[in-house]
Structures are given as structure tokens and as C-alpha cells.
Length: 142
Image 1 (cartoon, rainbow, N blue to C red):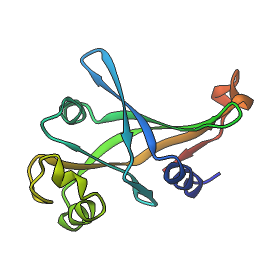
Image 2 (image 1 turned 90 degrees about the horizontal axis):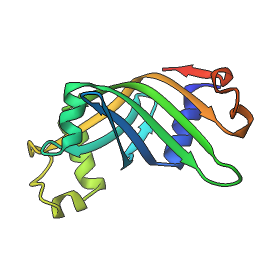
Image 3 (image 1 turned 180 degrees about the horizontal axis):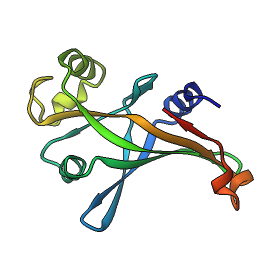
Image 4 (image 1 turned 90 degrees about the vertical axis):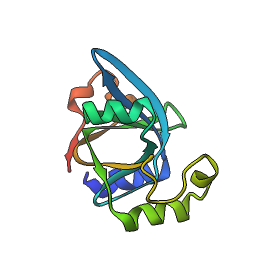
């Protein structure tokens, strides 16, 4: 298994559950991943939101992608968030998700817009085969 399999799975199953921490309390919410490629898993959020504050204070996250069917397959990714300020990437985001302008953003340079990615970490797939042997599931470092 290599990272390209992780990218393919993420793009095919973009709804992601992202776990953050606030103090000692875990916080989990669903995100619609923007895209994944060889440079990581990309997302966006708003700086007024609690999740942005949580990620800023503690960039460690766990992502969980789920493909339904049979008993389902999950891909779990542990890593750290990197905020990305690249203007061209933010322009692309607004072009691909114009609805962001309908919810209050003024454009790609709006300070309320935050793009982030998980570019380094460890991923593994879980299915019923590994139900009682999770530690044995092959890991991919990226």
C-alpha cells in the first residue's frame, strides 16, 4: 500500500470526520474535504469558527474517511494541520466552491477564510478483517 491509494480513497469518499481537541475534550465534526493529492488532504473553514481556534491552538488531528457497503471500510489519518495562505489556491477554492461567497465571504483574500491541509502523518485502512487486530493494519507514512 502506498499514499496514492490513500489519496484515491479520500477523493472517492470526501466526507471526513475530523477530531480536534479543546483542552482535554475531544471535538469531532464532519467536513466536506476539498481535495486530496500527493501533497496532502485539503480543507477550508472560517476563522470565526471554534474549529479554526482549536486547530490554531493544537494542530494535531485525526481524520476518518468512511466508505459504506458491506461492513464498510474506514481510512484513519493522524497528522498535523498546516494553514495554507497561497493566493492561487484560495482563488481556485472560490472558483470551485462559489457558494462560499453566498455565506458571507467577500473573496479569496477575506481574512475569515482559512485553507488547511494535512501534509504529513500516518494513514491506515480498517475493515472487518482488522476488527480485532487494528494494530496489525498496514500503515502508510506520508
